[in-house]
Length: 244
Image (cartoon, rainbow, N blue to C red; front, top):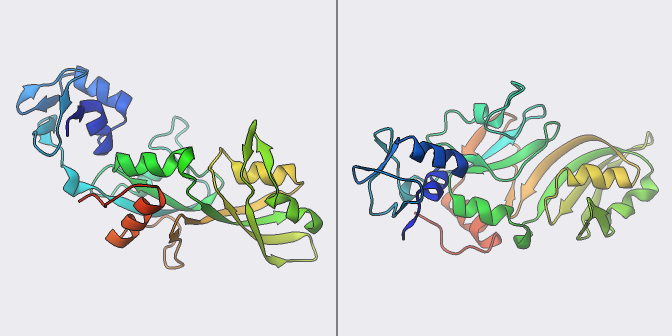
């Protein structure tokens, strides 16, 4: 199937669509040996697409990984403030993979990264409501915990009620919670907690859709997802058969 070149380059993990347009305009991209132009279309399965003389791989090269993002690392591929990025943590991945959504700098836990543009778009699209579960340590009035499970408005958007489970509760008003949300608004958990009078002490994503963060995966480390895990993700995000 033919698609715009910038979409193909982005989906293959070469660069963003905007950067792909610049790459094409610079003359660095060829299709079947002919210099490409912005707006050209191609079929990654049948055409030979090269960037700076090196052929980009087709569907057989899709990679989706799970990274345990440590606190203090930003979820970007580059950073103008020279902070440590997730791109640095996955530099040994055989292809360029992009984050599926975001975890803020001070949060940790499960972060999926992929060069499958279709899967990335499906997992992050608001209409698909892929659940995300967080282990959250908060300080505040225990009697207000139930408020976290009620409908509330975040940044003008009425979120669906979260699922909240108390894992542990101490006398010093420190509580261990598991919170499952159905959207993925910017800093949603932190804003929910602030509305209910809680200070977040630690925030760790422990599950996304059907996948759970296993204890053996240490902060800063990553692994490839299995074919079964990718298939489960595709089902959860409304996609069909796993790409090869």
